Image (cartoon, rainbow over all chains, first blue to last red; front, side, top):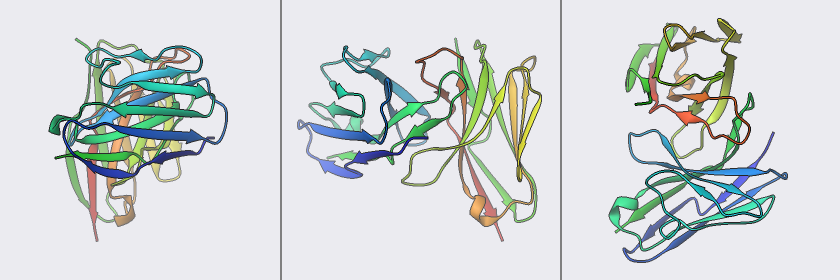
Length: 114
Length: 113
């Protein structure tokens, strides 16, 4: 199992600013995943963060908008840059979940851009 | 195109009844299918996993079925309780290492006493 501490849990930000979300895992993991959950929508994968290499982004998400760091096997950050109200969403980090394993999630960051 | 659909956005039932949630997918070949529970303000929490060669899996009051011909999974909660009220997500696992799960939109279950 894994315990993920994610912070902040919520924030209200001005448009045009950036917010960095942090996730700390209590064990070493190879892959970390970042999801976005818009109101009434499913979890959409933003990117996969692998320690020691650049993150792999899904279609529709770019590094300039969502830069990710993965400095070691227990920590990752996601930055939401130059925010607009359309970025208002819940952002979640996760580990595990593929190849017959359960996924573990942070509590999520509820972001409101005004 | 690839799709995963949970047919009902909301399901309201009375305490003691069985809740049945549906998950359908197209153009995927998942090796496993997983179900999660999400409470407001929290991340999803794993409930059950079923393999493609399993027809049914049970855990306490929970039962999951997986029909790869119909491309459908059913999730049942028997003897439902108000504490079961939450959003339930199905997720496809294509069975490759390092691959993220693919989630449906979820069904919000409300159990009234």
